[in-house]
Image (cartoon, rainbow, N blue to C red; front, top):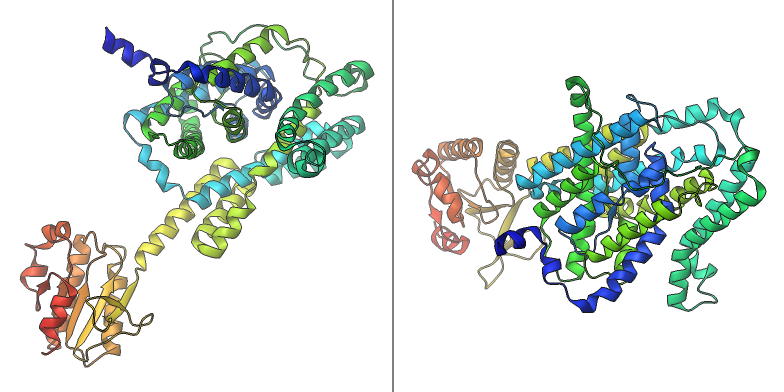
Length: 569
C-alpha cells in the first residue's frame, strides 16, 4: 500500500515543507492574475474563443504539477503552440466553430500521445539534436508571423494565411475594411505595453524603488485590461463597431471527446503533431533545465516528456489546446517566490475563479487589446542577439538560424522548421566530412606534440606525424585519405608516417578499408604506416582486421614511444 501511494503521490508533495506554503500561494495567485489577459489572447491566436485560454490553464496545469519534472515551470497556453494550432487546422475547419475546437483538442491529444510515447521510450536525448540556431530561428520567425497575424485585431482587416506573404497579400486586398477606432485603441494599447515592457527604466524606475517598479511593470497589463473594459462600457465601443470578446461561458471545462478523424485526416495531422511535440519538448525542457540548474535540482528529460505528454493528453479531453512551458510565466512564477508545483495549483484556482465569477465582467474587453498584448509580448522572442552571436562564432549555426527564420516566413511554420533542421543536419554532416588533420611536431624537452602551424616544435626529417581530430567513418574517410596524401607530398623525404589516433573514437568499415588502402600505397613507395594512441574500444574493433594484420608499421601506446623508436631509422 505504501509503495502504491508513493507512486501516485509526487515526491514534492510527500516531502512538502510548510515553510514554502506562503510563497507558493502568493506566487500562484500572482501568476494566475497576471496571465489571464495573456491566456485569453493565446486562445484567440489559436483561432479559438477566448475562454479556451482559461480552459487550457486548468487540467493540463494540474497534470503537469503532479507528474512534470520541474518544481517551478508554469505550463499553459503559449504563443508558439497557439499559432501552430491555427496554421495546422486552417484547412480543416472554420476558426471559432465547435468543429474547430474539437479538432484543436484532437491535436492536443495527438501531441500528448507522441510526447508520452517518447517519454516511455526514453527519447529525452533527442533534445540535443536541435541546435540553438534552428530553435532560435524558428521561434524568431514564428514571432514575426504572430506579430503580423495580430494586426487583424488592431485594424479589423480580415488578415489570413500561414506565411508572411499570405498575411500581407490579404491585408492589402482588404485594406479598405480598416476600422479607425479599433486601430486607435490597438495602437495606443500597443504603445503603452511596449513602453511598460521595454522602457521600464524610464517609465517606472525614475520615481519608484526597484522592487516597486518590478511589480508596477507586471501589474500594468492587468490594469490596462481593467481600464479598457471600463472605457468600452462607458463609451459603448461595441455599438461603434469595435469587436469585443462578448460573454464568456460560465463554468469549468467539461469532459468532451475530441473530433474523431478518419485515417487520412489523422495521417495528414500526424506530421504537424510530431513537429509541435518536438517544439513543445525543446522549449519546455530549455526552461525547466535552466531553472533546475539555477536551483541545484536534477532535471530528467524523460520525465519531462511524460509530464508534458500527459498534460496535453488529458487536456485534450477537457477542451484544451496544446500547451507548453511558458518562458514569461515561469519567470514570474520564480520571481514571485514559487518553491514547488503547489504554486501552479494555486494558479489553477485563479483560473477557476475567473470562469465562475468574472465571465460577464470580461465581455466588453476589445479584441484589439488582446492583439496588442500578444504583439508586445512576442517582440522579445525575435532573437537577434543569437543570430549575431552565431554569425560571429559559428557561421554554420548562423546559417541554420537564417534557414529556419526565412523558411518560416516564406513557407509557414512546419515547412520552415523542417528546412532549418535539414540545414542544421547538412551542416553537421559537412563538418564531420571535413575533419581537422594536423601535422604535428614535438615541443622541445617534453613528451607533448602540437600543430606545427601554432607552436614552435621539433620535427624529424624521416617522420611525418599527423593527428586526426575526428572519428573516422564513411562520410569523411575519403577526405582524410586525401589530406594524408597531400601531407606526404609536402614531406617527400619522410618514410615513416605516424597517425595519432587520440581523438578517434570509432573507425567504421569504410574507414578501415581506406586505411588499408593507404597502407598498401605507402608500402609500394617503401614507406611505413604506424599508429599511436589508439583507444582501447577502437582497438577492440580493429585488432583482428586485415588493417592491423597487414600493417607495414607498428601500433604504439604513445606518440613519444613511436618517435623514440623511429626517429633514428
